Length: 429
Image 1 (cartoon, rainbow, N blue to C red):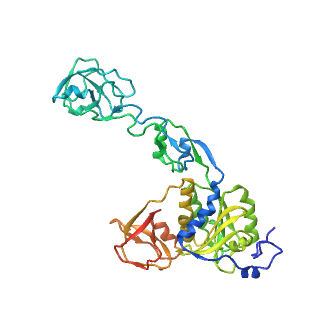
Image 2: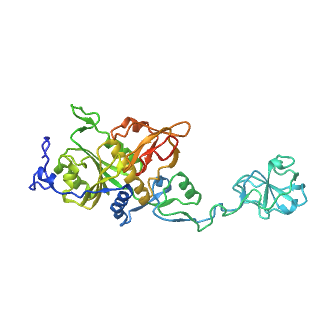
Image 3: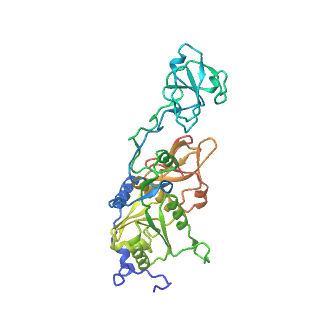
């Protein structure tokens, strides 16, 4: 049983002392954002080597990634139908301008109408099937009189001439049978589910949800609601990342706060490795004396590097007992930016969920400076005039500024300053 007292024990209990561990060489390099994204993709790619799919009812597929290609089993619309409330006609009956036609039997939506004979106009409602022989619809507003006669009444109606096809929704004009309507990997939102239902589809094959083990490290953090002793802070990382991950469609196993003891962390990861797909840790990845994640990973193929990004530079990436692991920095804003930059987009790319962040370019409301060698990600507020104002400073601890922000503002590497009115790329969060 572990003591509550901090012990910087090595991963192998009979191995070298913590001091010796700190002197052991670790894989360390600087890499740009694009290179790190490619490295993360390579680590996550094996999750697709074995199909992890399930068949679910259409409504249960909301927010999931499609794991099949859907070909239309039928035409949409499935038959020619009226775009308007009006009269179905043979356009050739009205070639000489306004003409008086006998009013035939009405065609309500959902019924199969009688064939239209020459010299007759059939009342028709929006969405109703076109009668055989009819090739156009004239809106009721254009008729004289512009009201429908009572059913069965002997009546005539005067109508303007019209072109064939007017106000007619042709069979298959939206989707033709056999068309690819949803490609493998499509993120399934309300619009896509609506299309599936219109095609009569009741079940689809989707990617199973990725299960992630979320681990926060640090002797200085305590759970919200617990007694906070001097020198301690309440943990925000677990809530910040779990909420972000759940919003992104992940199943999250929240391990809580793990002390800065490599043996404890190693044992926890081993306990969960068999039933999770991915491990994400926060903290313990920098070059300090008590970097628990670095120490724990000495015997595992995990690289630690400094990515040219601010915040979120220190990163760990590799596998633990064959499970992909992403080790994020410990400051709250840093770990969130790490998730948004290095994990969330790739989950969407590989598994169809979550859908990409909405991105666009907008003007700065004020000038800014940025470290020229780093891709800087700042928090921003959208103003009523459409410009963006940076919120808070560069610090990776500024949760108040993060909570007030609408967007992430991207200043790419190589840019050291931008003037008021210059454009930047923003991601809506």
